[in-house]
Image 1 (cartoon, rainbow, N blue to C red):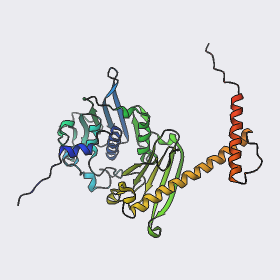
Image 2 (cartoon, rainbow, N blue to C red):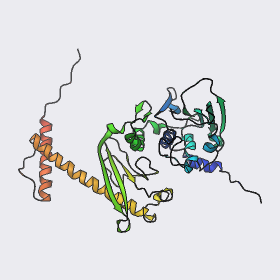
Image 3 (cartoon, one colour):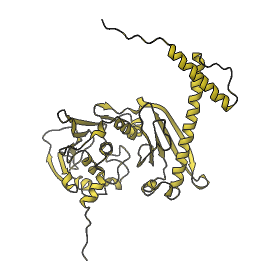
Image 4 (cartoon, rainbow, N blue to C red):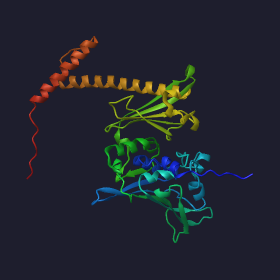
Length: 369
């Protein structure tokens, strides 16, 4: 009996590449670098001043690189990866993020021609230069070559995507790009001191942008049989609002928008449940139609987020009243007894504050010498 080997069609590969989402492509390439045990990851945008466009994107890292022994396992199958059969990175440094091997395709969202240049040490202890290239015209075909390194060099990989077709990559320059990237990598950057990621000359430093950081435990499921953890990070600025789900506190395998839960505060909510295996994570996108206990998880998380921001609003109102009292614009003695009295006092204080502001002397603009 003959075997029938299924080949992935170019149409399928194109769908997996998600070529309309360049920010997500950068996310996946940076995750590949982190899975490759890099300590420093740098994303560079090359611009053409005359075209006023991004003509190339490069993601550089100092990880262990790809050897000739690993090329087939890394690029030989679509929808599969050596990572699927391992929980930790090559040398056991980190838990792995990627599992399906789709990250290699995401780069086509950044350019029609992609070249990976890797410096590595193979199983025989030989230093190698490995080059892997592909193009959007035949996404399912990758060509590669390996040569012996002429001299010792640091290991690492550079993925360069060349935007020869001049497609718009303006999403990478939008204000939301930095916020999205910071949110994606906040858990691992906050938990691993030796890891640094830079994007277009700017360090992704989530610690500097955190306004409020809350950790919560919550039960869910029938008779509260399961327990999860929720981390809500409120950001100082931006409009990013998203939920991330994962089995541990560094790796989140599913993401969804969070504006329908909370539309005022910019925030990221990281949901951790050790029972969230690949099968359960795969049905999160079904929302309320997901089977139990995943549907219970989503419902409990959304409820917990709403309750959290209701508390935050009460805290902010109390802080505002204290500020008004300190600045002398709060005309009442004692705390309001009823909700109408609370509203009246707030309205009065706001009006008094606005009157004071309108009578304030305008600031003097310093004059130069």
